[in-house]
Length: 212
Image 1 (cartoon, rainbow, N blue to C red):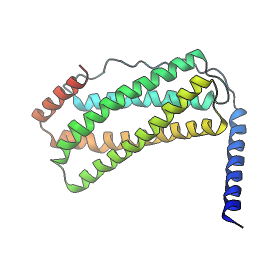
Image 2 (cartoon, rainbow, N blue to C red):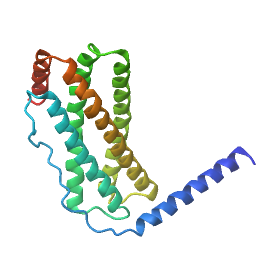
Image 3 (cartoon, helix red, strand yellow):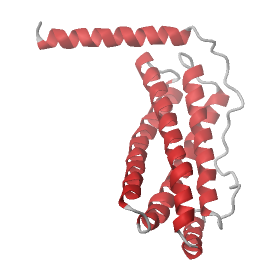
Image 4 (cartoon, one colour):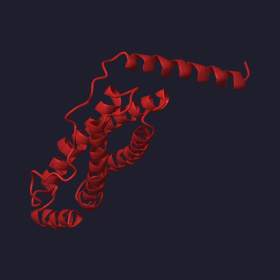
C-alpha cells in the first residue's frame, strides 16, 4: 500500500467516525437551552482583603461560563442557535475573556512569584505545570471562541466543526476542574501557610488595581 492510499484510508475512517458520532448526537433531544445567561460583572462574594477568596470566586465564575458553552455545544448541535442561546454564549465568552485575563494576572503576577520565593523546588515545579496547563487552555479558548463566532455568523457548523467544538469545551472543562482542584486543595492552603499578612495586603492592592 502506498503512503497516499494509507492516508486516504485513514481519512475515510476518520470521516466514518465523525459521521457515526454526528448521527448519535442528532438522535438526542434538541430542546431549547434555557436559563443559561451569564453575568459578566457579578460582584465578588469575597472582599479584596481576602485574595484567596477572590481567586476562588473567579474559579466559580469561570466554571459557570464553561458549563454554559459546553451545554450549548452539546444540546444545540445540528441546528441554528436561538436568540437566548446566542446571548448566553456571548455572555459566557465575555465573562471568560475578562475573568481569565484577571485571574491569570492575579496568579502569575501576584501569587505564584511570591509563593515560589517561599516554597521548595517541588512546589515550584507544580506551579510550572499549572502555568503550562493555562497556556493549553488559552489555545482551547481561542478555538472555542472562533467556532462559536462562526456558528453565530453562519447559523450552522459543519459536523466536524461541531464535534471539534464539543471536544474542546469538554477538554476545557476537564482542564479547568483539574486546575481548580490542585489550586484549592494544595496551592492555596500552602499560600495561607507561608505568606504573611503584609504580603497578602500587597496582593490585595494589586487585585484592586486590576479591577479599577
